[in-house]
Length: 420
Image (cartoon, rainbow, N blue to C red; front, side, top):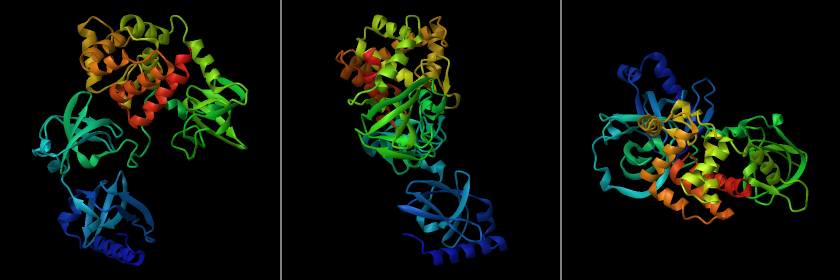
């Protein structure tokens, strides 16, 4: 229920006066506590004299109550402060959120979720158990829920988290869109693009966003599949396009040649990729290993390569996720540790392409046999390349925004890599 402006102003004034006068109980002024928004939308107002409406927080958002008087609370959220109604939230102690409860008895249909804030994954349903910390945007699978305790799985490992810290992939609770290391190409300034295409007519192959600047954090408009554009320049997977007099930026994966003629975006991309996909290149070494050592067909190999392109841009020593992910496949946290330990045990250098490919083969065989089996059964066609890239992304890499990322990588495998 929205607060009426006059009522809100009065309540805010009461709280401010109470705070200034020291009328708030000492314990409440000194001891903060966590609360979860229970209203569908909780209005938040500024503390300054004008008491402007700052915006609203969605159901499930966790805030810190710094102090309160009556039905008005001073809250903090991600470093910002404001005033809100106490009745729009419910106190919750994180230490009690994942206590020993029979989570297994309250099952839900397994579904992908992400951490909408930095949080902890506990080994047992108790905050006294061992835990690992994960960043906002970390993807996992939700297995069961009991109150505010969630049973989750990530990379074959099961643990427990605070349910209010989780959300659907692409959730609005994220402050920024989380993307793999190589996907950061979309934030590069396309004005410095290595490939100049002049005025190549292209058409969108799916509904996509056209950003105002070469950054996914900038303003954007969404265009439908089949929208005709002019490709101006390309840098990695970032395409500078023009429509009428307006210029913007999008991903190259969602573009194809316009049948009306002219140089195609796909052919431009093929030329760039083909030049780097030469004998002895990292891309070529990976491809030969996937086909020769692992027995994948060409389509499946291109599907895996598309994922490696998005994860690391084929760079074996690249770090991601604040240093918690590493290598060609951006192995994360425990999987990164497994990579290092396994390579050491097998006299391999974990920083090299060979060491990481050997570990990839081992991990698929032991921890992800279903993924390996699927890769070996895909048709050796462009559609097979799409299926392989999509399945590998969704079930092995499991990035944030899992579905949209799987589609993008599938299109890259199908429309670019498989044509080589």
